[in-house]
Amino acid sequence: MRKVLRARIMVGMAVIVSLAMSVGLCAGCSRTAAVSSSVACSARRSDKICVVTTTGVLRDMIAHIAGDAATVASIIPDNADPHSYEPSLASIRNIVYADIAFSNYMLLEEHSIITALDSNVRKGVPNVQLAEESVKNAADIIPMIEDVSLDTIWLGLATERVERSVTEGTQTQGSGNAVHADISRSDQIRLTATKVQGPGDLFAYLTGTFGNVDVYFNSADGIDAHDYVDLPADAHTHLSWAFSKPGVYSLDIRADHYNAQGEKLQSLGSTRITFAVGVNALQVAKKRGASVVLNQGHADLAYNIVSQDFSVRADDAQSSRSATRQRTYYAPKEVIVEVPSQAIKEIPAGGGYSFLGSKKSKIYQLPQAVLGKHVHGDIDPHLWQSVSNGIAYVKTIADRLTQVDPKNEATYRRNAAQYIEELMDVDDYVRSTIASIPEERRNLVTTHDAFAYFGKAYNVKIAGFVTINPSSEPSIQDRKRLAQTLRDLKIPAVFLEPNLISRSSVLQQIAHDNNIQICPIYGDAFDAHVHSYVQMMRENARSLKKCLG
Image (cartoon, rainbow, N blue to C red; front, side):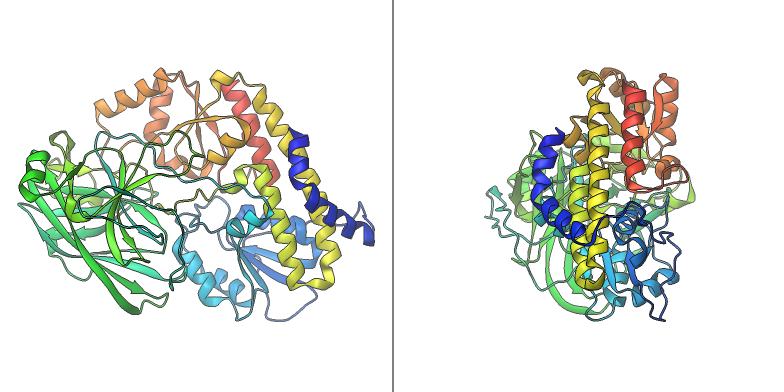
């Protein structure tokens, strides 16, 4: 397999090596820059360029290539979650003084990070989206498929920029042809609830990383301008939906375009979506002239920036993670969202859920399925979990550093060539280590859907990212179901990221009760034990070998 990987990168390597050889390779040359997340860029110019990036993984990669020619600082500290971290004032300072900025993007980072980058980087300074740009260097991308199985429909909100049409009363497929509209990645589409009709109260909320609850729609205290969700373009967010009484509910939503400064630029349109809660959804559909009842799988109420209209888009079943995404689009007025009688739950204990009513009262609930504040796009952003993609990142970084600092091109090319050699050895190690695990035991279960690239590159089956309904206390039945799932798959171990352990107490307890190992795995953050990309990939391979092999 190393020959295959070598063949894929040989052309790029030829250029890198020739440039490196022109100045002479020196084994003693330093390839380590200042890499602490707290490193401060200075307004006082020096012979070093200042590089700011978002995550520790990118910081480490860039530092290997930059060597002593640059100071490299990351916005997100090690052991923090890039999906939810909010930038500090020190981070803003680094952005202001940066000579080049790198983000992963593909909606990996919290939107406030991206807004901070785009708003504070100086005019003319390159602002690089590594995941997107690395495609030209043979980075492989795969779709983000929402494949968590729930007893109810999994309903989110989304924005998109694709050409498609929604025929009234007819199922149609999205074309998948991306169209660029005049909305930047720092802008937001605000989806505001304007009216709720029904026998009780409607709520839409999200349970965050550490159990904190963000309430977006709450008709119990009146629908007003504070009932909204902000999404960047081409994004999706999970939500929990709750209803206080059975019956038919309608929710009116308006879309508006806001810039990074929070200024409303234009109104974009509105729609209505209908829920059948604890009643016969087919009868409701017939009475209202709707043609579709959605009661399972994953769907979004989505605003299309190109066509400037809403649709309900439902994900079709996928044969594999790498398959081309297939979606069916419906006009909202043709859809009834079913909230079945079995969706009734007790309101969880804790003050965070008091807006739903008194403790132990009953609500009808569609859960968000995946724990945490989780806004993402259609493409899986965790490209570096395949080392060949990591090599594509290295090439892109070297190219971009050279553009900003051409006098140090030889340094960047030499360091990139050496680093690629090291990464090829890492790829060999990961591949051979995983290959030593019996294929029938290569089932990876985690609490974070971040390892599809790893699975595809190294022939590991992503058996699932296991989460209990995050917005309610798991019932005895929930726990039994999860335990049975783990037993049915004969899972010997579940894998938890060190920075996410605090959100996984239920999974840990069930694993302990069923004599299932709990093992570490690193997704998008370092810790005190693992503090480089090379270490991350090697440690993940070792952990899978130890716990599955």
